[in-house]
Length: 220
Image (cartoon, rainbow, N blue to C red; front, side, top):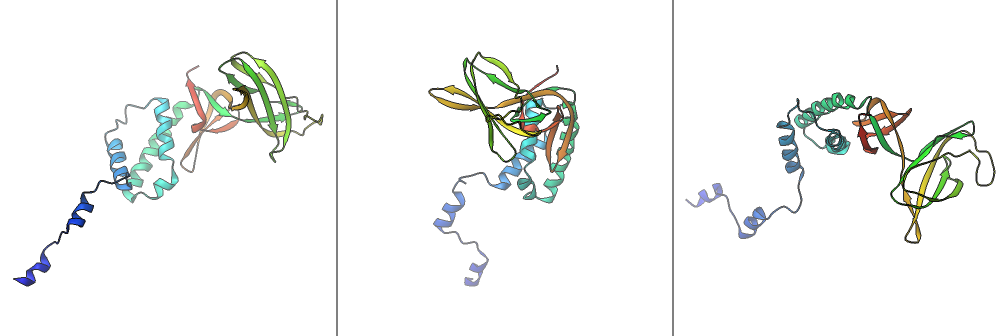
């Protein structure tokens, strides 16, 4: 019957071609399937190592991704985040090294500026106030490789005593004829772990750092 054609599915060569065309990028559904499979077969009694744990936290802490997920998946992520919170408590008491570029000036004495040199090189330091004004700059000379420290006396390049407060610093080395910025460091025992807006932080030496800033963890 001719009217029976209305009940058939019609395929054109172009539509069939489009249906078989491989996707150029991983869509959200495929991403969710992969991640759900990973979570489904993860052994909750076999805790991850610290580096893997921090990497997983960083991935799951993306608010934008979580808001785009289905309700059931959000519940699964919430359960996983609770597990991460329990695991995060294992960082308390461990010694960590974190990226840092801030110091506090108190009574003319600053926190130590700590940095690591991979080879002998000339070193420079710049210090900025809260308004990002350069208040101090100095060439520290050629230094040998290894961990180094510098303490600022709170006096600006112009000889003015700077007020107490928080300052930002940048450390530079001299390589291939030009200055190259390197990161400052801070380190110590983790006194506490904090959770804020699906992000994880550690409290070290009275300062709060994102777990993404951790570059080394030890039991010492």
